[in-house]
Amino acid sequence: TPGMQRQVSLSPVEPKGEHELKLLQQQIKREEAEEEERANAAEMAEEMRIQAEVEAEEDERDRTQAGGRNPKVVDGEMIRYDFSTGRRPRRMATRGDVRYDPDELGRSYLKVFGTCVLFLKLDPSFDGGNCGGSRLNQYTINMEVKLDQLPAPGTLQPLFSTATYNESDALLWISPEGLVGRGNNFGSGMTGAGGAQGGRLRPDQWSFVTAVFDCVDGMVRTYVDGQQCSVLPMRDDTATPAAGGLVPGGVPDAGDAMLACLDGGFSAHEQVCLFSSKDMTHNVESCNIRQFVLTTRALQPDEVGETVSNLRAEFQGGVAAAVIDRLRELGIDPDIASWAAASATGGSLEERVENAVNFVLQGQF
Image (tube, rainbow, N blue to C red; front, side, top):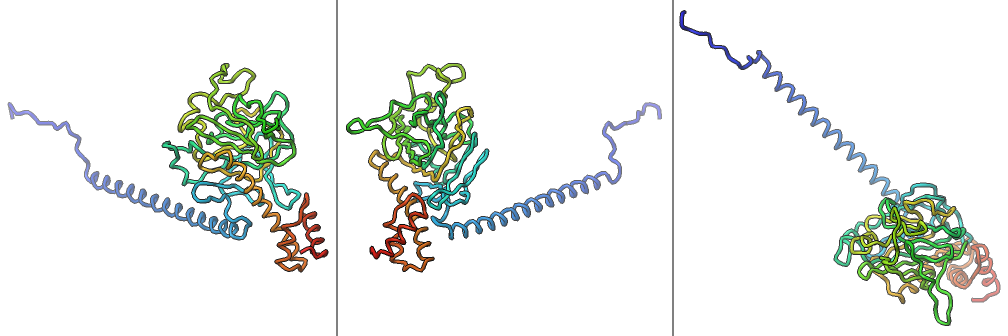
């Protein structure tokens, strides 16, 4: 009709059935998502079931193992890793080669080769930190170690690091003279009464290395077999760092201002590293370890010797238990076997058993 114009819609006309098709697609996507969620939940449940079975098996092995659970947490303030059982501790991880070897006393120790890193997880109960920080700002480590040889002149052996994944330099090092110090500072070796030489590591000899970290006072004290080795500041204001954060001579300096503070690089959390540093050029051929203990407080000097004596006595108690077992296998009365084992000495398990048998035969009880 003249004067009338056709109205054209600019909106597309939805074909018949398109709405139903969209609803169907949405339903299919929901069902697929629900199925994926069920599959993920079932997979997680299966993983938890397997983990529970593995933990139950580990619990049973811990129950029958001398010393019990490994690592062992004592009173919420100490974690102890025992490497003398020949069985890998639960929270230990390695990056490199390790091997369990027997010692002369019938126990085992862990040999750590070359540039291998030993990672030891701390207990979750330590996560709250101390001294007002979120990390452990006061703590003490004890390590029973043996070096097949000391570092060559001009090199160092890394010993301990709080770097969770070995991403920074070690905090404690061993010098060619057997001193235990930090970064670029080993002191001059402490002397006792009458000028007696302080604690030093000796090649091919088991020793306890103790380090007391106090981030409140900014100091590290080191000991070897309970004898003070060095007292060192966490920060060395006299060192002049060269390019790359190294002091002259190429030794990593772990004592800068960022490390020497609460929750800084000297503070411990989550896990620690042994025998390695991000700079791998300082490692000796191998290191050996029998136990590692971390206490969540800074031990006083008079406590260090007592702690080392207790740890050594516990190890010797395990050796005595092995002697008792051997004597009982020979038909010796348990009470007499216990007395003879406590009295017998010797550099090997066989020597101790032989001496204990001689005590019994001679009637020295």
